[in-house]
Length: 100
Image 1 (cartoon, rainbow, N blue to C red):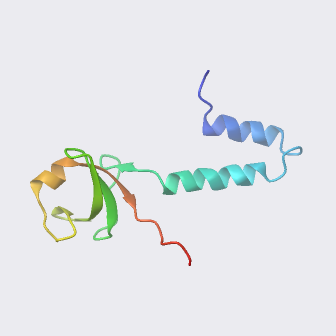
Image 2: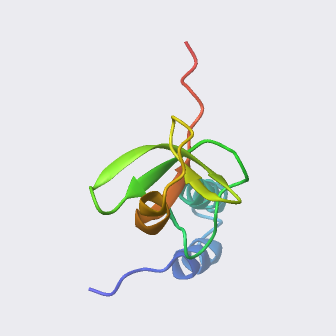
């Protein structure tokens, strides 16, 4: 079975919008949420300077908090190393804490 693309789903909803009120808005909200919660490859983009994020460390299969600076990735202790720079493959913004 072929994979349905976002554009195809959007077009199908637009064609049937009269029978599916609110469906297009719901799809757009889901697509925005998916984009905000996606792991971003470091080859595609880097996080905002000195903003803490979660990173994936390929060599050890770990995730941890880190910041990106002009010198490279720093872990929670503030250390910058070539090993971190070479092995961080993806990052994602840290989500907001839950409301309690």
